Length: 66
Image (cartoon, rainbow, N blue to C red; front, side, top):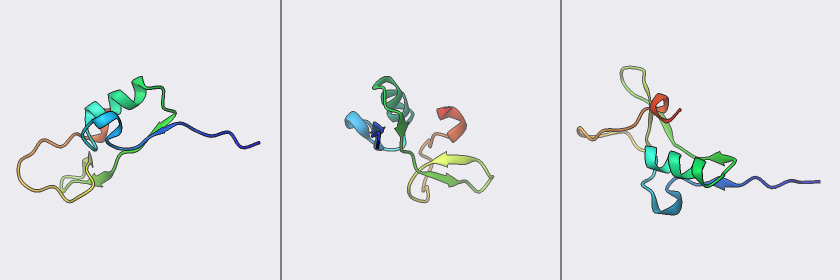
């Protein structure tokens, strides 16, 4: 028997993609899994972003999400 999983795509419920708000919303919704994009920053830190970051925008780290 195949049991479906409830997942939350990045940006679920209108939250910004790869944001801490998305992570909190996904968990609160009861999703069994949620999507985030992960890249390694120049200093080795794992960050939540799909594209190579530009500028000084604050990008959440994976550690902050967990």
